[in-house]
Image (cartoon, rainbow, N blue to C red; front, side):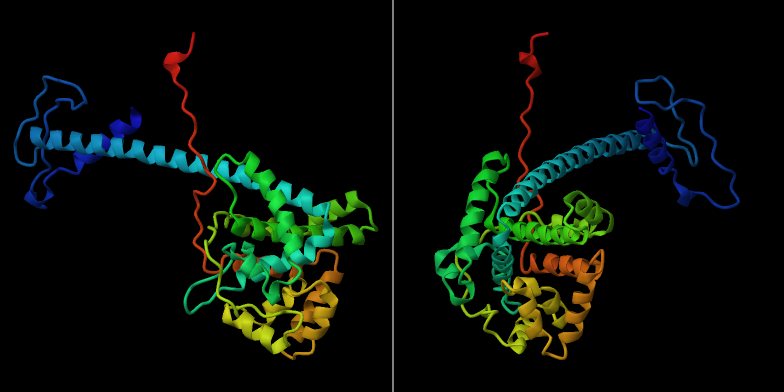
Length: 345
């Protein structure tokens, strides 16, 4: 009631006909009648500068309109907050499922990283087509030379997908989302494993080290990308190099084509094949890439790996959204309304 009364008076005062007043004329005098949102016998006189009954009614109508629109806004905001909570809860469960499954199958990590990279690297800037759209799930695309050896990773994710879809209340998770969040979990696993090694193999101390000095807080933007849609057709051939056979120049050209450069190529070395050190040895032969390779190798030897981890997270976040329109309502669901008339009190 206090808010409504405040808006009413604010609108009322704005109706004073300023144009009819001169600087030298005295301020208008109003009657002492009270204006309120109920029938009253008080009448406001119409004199110079006074407010007419019509103005009052207009003001009342404007006030009701404002209050009504405010209620709609509040409802919309509440709905948005509910959706945010639903998506957040769902994503937490997804990440937990992926992390648990990947931790039990660490040998698949290199393939999971390459799977995410190759699904995204079909992006073509000129046509705005391709990208991380889940097209790699189709056998005709998965069987291409650049995707050799990745079928085990996809089969692994198929099983995790069944688990996720079983508890999802907002529909099945898209392959596009699943593949990119699997890469996130795989990367987190490598970060945590490195911290445990630096803690002398003590898992508890390693977890503490990663929590205190690691990059766990840098994933916020990546986590907002939930909502990729699956394409229903394969992406064109010839867009993704065979990383283990490509020259450094070919790799650079592809990274440049999607909007990256030598720095991003160097930080994504773990995505380019099963042997990261061998890949970095090759990349270091290029004068443009070599300084970045050396920088990230030094960073990985430090306690926190800050430079390496932050740059990798930033690059993966950009890569995982190439050409995609994120549906920020994905995986939300309507809340079942309670029929209070059927409740027995």
